[in-house]
Amino acid sequence: MSDDADTPAPPPLSRETAHAFLRGRRSVRRYRPGRPPDAVLHRIFCSVAMAPSAHNRQPWRFFVIRDRALAARLATAMGERLAADRRRDGDPEEAIAQDVARAFARITGAPVVILVALTMAEMDTYPDAARGAAEHLMAVQSTAMATQNLLLAAHAEGLGTCWMCAPMFCPDAVRSVVPVPSDWELQGLVTLGRPAAPGRDKPRKALPEFVRLGPVATGADDPDADSAWTDSTAADTEPRA
Image: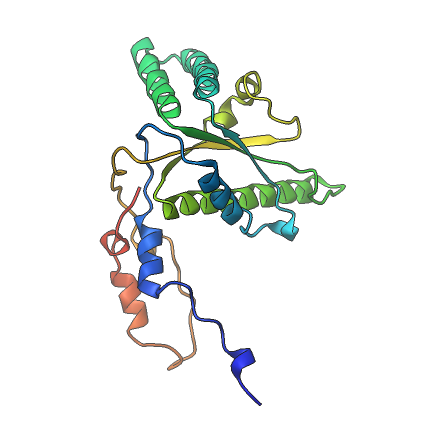
């Protein structure tokens, strides 16, 4: 009998190419003029749809803002809320103005702004708070994985992106400007466009800081493997923002 059925299909990319692609993604905060064609956005969201999710419920939701005027109104509304919060914190007016201006420029400078949200409409419900909280967290995790697909799919198209969590701090301000459905829980936004400048390199933790290898039977693994992990540094991971 042929073993073909048990043989995994070859990967569409070489190992080296795939890892180089993943490590090459950077956060981009400055964009060139011109909105990507809708066909490109369609390809990106087709890849977003393939993200894993809890129970395969796919709770993620995205609102794509293609109108620069709407993006400006959104940035203004969120900036006003940011300024009010910072004033209550007692921060200096100069620092507040700088932060608000920086956030406004990042949002309005992007040809496309994508609001990221989740809905619990199709997630499981429980009579107790503990399992309900776990189910909600599963929806958050699922939405985060879909958003990572969004960042990587945009990267595959030669586009830059930047993940921002600001809408979580001011959902009412967002809703005052953007017609987001009432059952959507805002999780953040992604700016998207053609990069005007490459993202900055940022340091990455060494692997031993976030990976723990469990024990294996004696002689069952490469004796040099553990030392290779221990010796790994942030530089080995080719730092990316």
